[in-house]
Length: 381
Image (tube, rainbow, N blue to C red; front, side, top):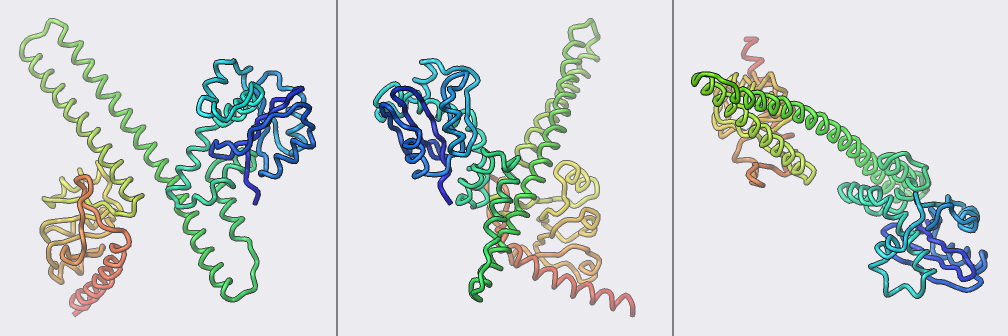
C-alpha cells in the first residue's frame, strides 16, 4: 500500500510543492520556474498516495483544484487567506529547509491542513497505541481524511477486515490466518468494550456534575441565609449542614478520582481489588451504590456473613482462609484464598495481574462447584 501523503501547492510562474506524511514530517519541498503539472504529478505519485492538495488562499486557485483532480483527491482551502504572520508561525520549525517564499506558501498550506485536523491525527495515534495496532495508523488516517469512514472506530474495523481477507492455500498459513482472525475479532471486541466504557464514564461524569451542581446550589443557599437576621441556633445548624455538604462534595470528588484510577489500571492489564473490612448489609449496600460491586473482585479479612455478597453479582471473593463447606455450598460466586494469589499495590490500590488472575479464577470455579455438589448431596440426605 502506498504511503498516504498531504500535498501543499503554490502555483505560479515559479511553482512550489510541499509533501508531508501523516505525522506532519516533510517528505519533499521544492520549487521550480515553469513547473509543468505532469512533472509535479510524477514527483508526487513517486512518494505516495495523495489524500488532499492544499492551498493557502481564498478563493482557491484553479491550478490547485486541477492538481487535486488529477491526483484523484479533494482540494483543501483554509477558512480565510493565510496572513504572512500565520505562515511564519506555521513554518517556524522548518525555516532551514525553506529556500524561498513560494516554498513557504506551499508548506504553510499543507501544515494548515494538518493543524486543522490535528485532533483526528492525535486521537487516532492514541487509540491505536492503546490497542497495540500502530501499524494501522496510515490506513486509518486515509479512510478518515477521504471520508470512507465516519469515525475512528469504523476506520479501525475496516482496516482490520481488510487484513483478514487474504486467501491462502498453504496449510501452515491457514492455521496462522485462523489465529490472526481470532486476534482481530478480540481486538474488535476490545474496541466495542472501550466505547461502552467511555459512554459509561461520560454518563457517570454527567451524574457527578449534576450532583456537584446541586450541592453548590445548597451551599450558596445557606450562604445567603447567613446574611439574613437569624438566631444563633439557626446559624449553628446552617454551619453544620454546610460542613456536611463540603464533606460529601470532597467524598464525591475522591470517589470519582478512584474510579478513574481503576479504569486506567484495567486498561494496563490489571484487575483492581475492592477491600472490605466489616461485612454488614448496610456497609455493603452503601459500597455498591458508590462504586458498583457487580463483576468486581472483593477482598475480605474474615469468612463471616459471606452470603451477603450473593445479591451483588461479584466476580470473585478473596478470603484469608477457606470457609466451611456448608458456607461454600451456599455461595454463588467463586472463592480464592489470599495465599494462592499475588496481590500488588499501585497508587494505593490493590491489584492482580489479569492473566494470572484468570488462572486462579478458573481453579476457584472448579473448587466452588465441587463444594456445592458436596453440600447439595448432604441436604438431600
